[in-house]
Image (cartoon, rainbow, N blue to C red; front, top):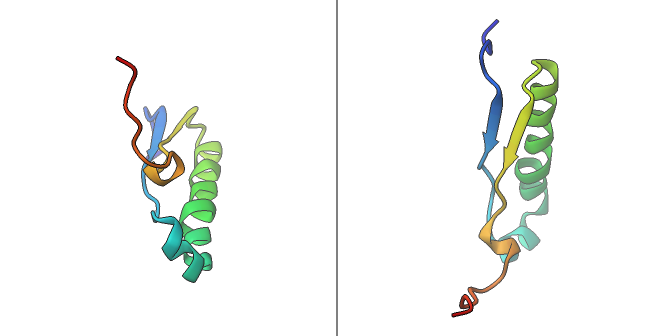
Length: 68
C-alpha cells in the first residue's frame, strides 16, 4: 500500500485573489473546491484520518494590528 503509515494530508494549494476569480470562476472552482474535494475523497479511500486545510489570506481581509 503506497500510503502505509500516512496519517495526515496538508492541503496548501489554491488560487488566490478575489478579483481574478471574477474573471476566471471555473479555474478557481476547479482548484479551490473540486481539487480539495478530491483530496478529501482520497483520504477517505486510503483511510488517512487527518486533513489539514490552510485557507488563503484573501479570506481574512486587510491586516489589523494586534491589541497591545
